[in-house]
Image (cartoon, rainbow over all chains, first blue to last red; front, side):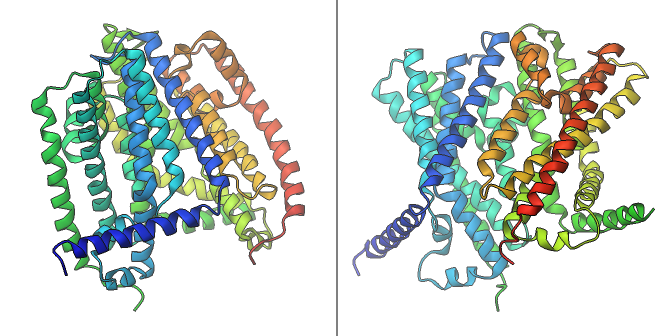
Length: 268
Length: 266
């Protein structure tokens, strides 16, 4: 075997699973319409909320109305990213731990941790990602951003780092099912905390801001990428968005290895 | 008397179920607490940005408003639209129809049990918010029974309304779109996002013409001290009228629905 062969093999398997997932979902095409309606209604409600808030104030700290719409766009992109594979995959993982089907995942000659994160795909969530990006673009045009290549790259980097953090955080939540077998609604924890990210973390009281930055990392996932485009983040802060995801990934890996020793299998 | 014993038995049964799945319940309670908490902080930030007040509200009265929204929403919300449509679709309702008692009684007692147990988390959340966000309540003693009465009425009407909407599952297989529509109206008009006084005037007129505002915000505004005794009495009448109208409709829909019910899946 060449030096990269096992990695290549892994990506081939992933590709096969992704294709299978897409084909499977394509049978239920009405779901696309469903997703579109749900996303648009949610979007309209959120925008109405922002408009109402700015009826009563010209700005929230340094954030203007357009900045908040941009933030909402980033929020939708991250949510779409979660819905695309994290939510369905990890929900499948929870079911597997409860029913014992997770045994079969452990038996596969693949890294189980990566596999459980990407075992299922729900392509309809691309609707959220595209709507979110459109919103970011629209807010950017309205704001008249001087979009240089640098800030686009920074946006990409911080967004990617946000994805990584969110993925590690979801995995940590899911791993807790090794101990509490029946926690089908564990992701509601994330969903309800993720609502905070529709607003810039700077509006929250200090204890919550610290919590949302270091313990529950929604600040890095949403506020930071949006702030790179509205241009009020010092570079020294941005470099942290390279280290923090690394920390979360290592933490998730260690927790996984520890948790897996507690898994006793339910089927046998 | 028989019904009373039935309720006591159901309550005990449901309490034990919820105690068994307490982690799961704590997680649902978290989402119930987070929503008003976020909107409270957003509006407090607005008030601060405006030098102390937005509309008629200060940071302190916003805190009071949203803490009460949390309480009233806990007291009145149901998840029937999800559970009944599931029971109808999968055929589980068939077994419940065999019981010599209307299925609604078990749903009512189930909600009672949940709400009672929810206090275990709701009360500490209320106290913590009281300490952290310094709400300013301005009510007189008579507001308390007026509030409790309004909240009880609202809980009854909201239960009847959501039970009725849930019956749509007799006719539609996938009710998820309907549920999204209903919860959107509820979110928009019930005053959970902002006191209705902060919306434009036309919105307030539309909102008070629909049942949603009365189901959450009306009791809250009694306790915040925004309503005169006369307005409160009118509010009771409005709630009672909605209750009778929707209740009558519910009975019609239920009869027609059960006749249609084919017990799929069993």
